[in-house]
Length: 214
Ligand SMILES: C[S@@+](CC[C@H](N)C(=O)[O-])C[C@H]1O[C@@H](n2cnc3c(N)ncnc32)[C@H](O)[C@@H]1O
Image (cartoon, rainbow, N blue to C red):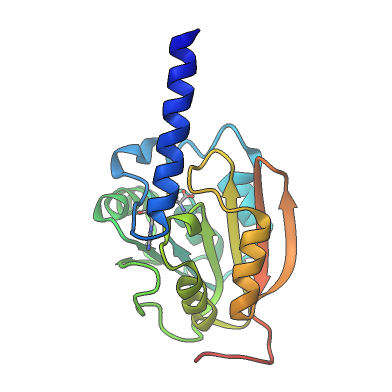
């Protein structure tokens, strides 16, 4: 019993320190943990790739940004949904994550995915080119969350949708209130919400009028 107590306290302290440090510098999910990300989260149905993509109204021919794509859990099914005339741009900070995503794209015989090694907020996304953007359990890993959201906002077409998913099982968890506040600050309007406290997704629209790319 005392051992369990010590373990829980230790885990809590590590998580809190990790969260505080994450706000100042990049501490991404380690590549060696990618197998866990690939499990497609058996603990929270609302964090599953199929559930998130079902709510995103992906159409053949669309261009999709998967920012913080990790091992390609959503990249591959998104590319299948937009088809040969569509495109997915999969961006991640870590080469090891992109290598696994590329492997899966090859195995699925997909040629409509562009892989980019870059950090959110580095200015690599371009302007007004995406119909949809996906940010699944990534926001809390980005030190400058507002800068990253502004870059995504600018990279979307007017009327484009950003889908943000967060799960309580992620040490970088961001609450619904935090996501709404940060997204509102850069100009997004909430267009949909599903899930619960364990895992939720907010779909945010770039309005067709008002602030555009800066
Ligand atoms: C928890 S994983 C989630 C992967 C994927 N979105 C999913 O849900 O399966 C977070 C990913 O975000 C990436 N990441 C963290 N900070 C980033 C940043 N500043 N820019 C781009 N990618 C980042 C990490 O390398 C990692 O692959």
